[in-house]
Image (cartoon, rainbow, N blue to C red; front, side):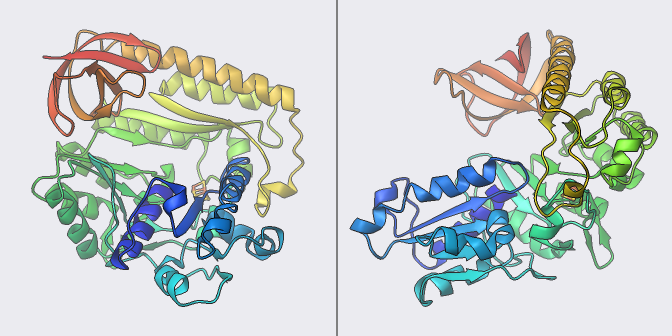
Length: 418
Ligand code: SF4
């Protein structure tokens, strides 16, 4: 979401004739876009911005700005604590960037949360090659007790289908192959009579869209209409991110996740009924307040029953401003660490077994770049979002190719063009 927001900001600056640079010394504006979901990312972002304050000695006109969720959350204290920062902007105020940078007296703060802002009509400045992020809704009404998002990004609101279609068509014209529809709760998309399955179908029918992904859905809003549209359209990837967070219903209740363990498993069964080969990935938090060994065993049980294709796994840490901060953080740090290790090991084993089962099969892979480790290798993704590494030269970036998988190591599959 922040990458997509950064592209919107870059688009606004481009329209004012600013040009992007990778050299901080050349920049007249440096904005750091921040996320406050996890502990550590926020302090790293401010430290990152602090690195640039000395550049003002040589370029007194340099504007340094902190934008995004940390700016929204810490609004009052940032300018006091970091007087070198000129701009503090929350996620709903980016339209004001040109006006504030060009005309306003510095320093400036705007953290107004909007009930309507969806950045309709703005064209993002993208510098990716294959995938185009398209934000379709913003905000969240779910109020999970551990999460700051509803407070930093406000209530849910969705863009009109026509404006999304215009942006997707432009991305296709610009050469993008894959569209990823984005939203904090992407499948609670709702604009007038249109719901997420309607939008998904409309985007799937746009000529030239080779692949469509979406993230992140909430299990509560996965319905048969959505699964039916996914099944019916070949260009909608058979891959769903379905955040579990915890396996025990007791903990899910404390997290205010709105589903039980059984309901979550029912959703998984429904997905597999419609699309037996659909990959399912997840997020898991261990050590939430009150999580006993028995509760944790329930998380392991869900993992064994679902066998996720991938998982983002974290130790719980209280986030200021959330409801869970009022609960006693009573799981000792060493227990959290031990639980985290156990789920990581389990997930590694599940992933490897799933990947090994693909050895010898032919997968359709969209090539999206070079391997970071070896420029002689290219990387791509299967329809089910699995990473495949293949020798360079055998396919071009942006090409969809049939790949024979010949090995599976760690999280990666190795293949050659069939
Ligand atoms: S659904 Fe829960 S975890 Fe996701 S953004 Fe909303 S409050 Fe946060």
